[in-house]
Length: 236
Image (cartoon, rainbow, N blue to C red; front, side, top):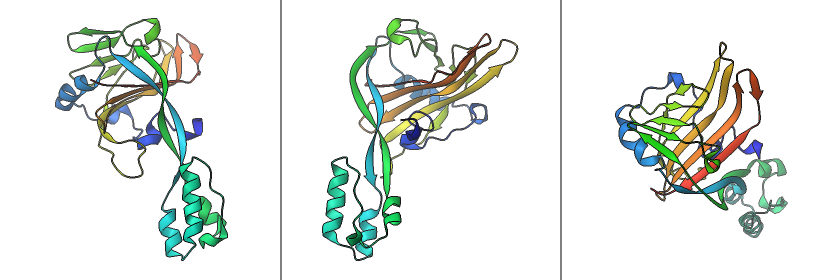
């Protein structure tokens, strides 16, 4: 599974990985869009997982252009539609190496069948995930609804990066809008550090996707490189 993603849903929509400190403040955009996307207190969401499916990329056009067998092409396409890895057929009119280059595994989101209820505290312009068992992964994350800044439990604050719509045919999911917080920080004096990403997207169907991918953390000199991830889908 790790080969599918540089970070969380980055593999799905090619969200840029950039220094949070280098991004511009969201200001008015965050003040209007962010509160509408973040979950509300007591929000229930569906837990998702990242899987993969085989996608055929421009193979049909290439085979037709090469004068290959349409029957062989139909067999390949049918195999891919069933989720199987198609076998090479010389009747396609292209080489085996070229055929392999046209196959690509595409990351997709799949439901786990599980739901969780979130506990959040709204204090003025700040929304914070509280410390409850069902909230164990998200707990401590705190959003400034005016600036769009995210504060993580280790004490670091990071700016949001605005995500443009992604509707191209090469995308696994359609994104209308959203934000990403890439965080990587270290405090030598406190011996605290963290590396991960939070993503918040409005999907094409109007639902919202909240993802949290923690790569590693350092708390008071104790290093934890256990990678964890949670993806939550909900409606507002």
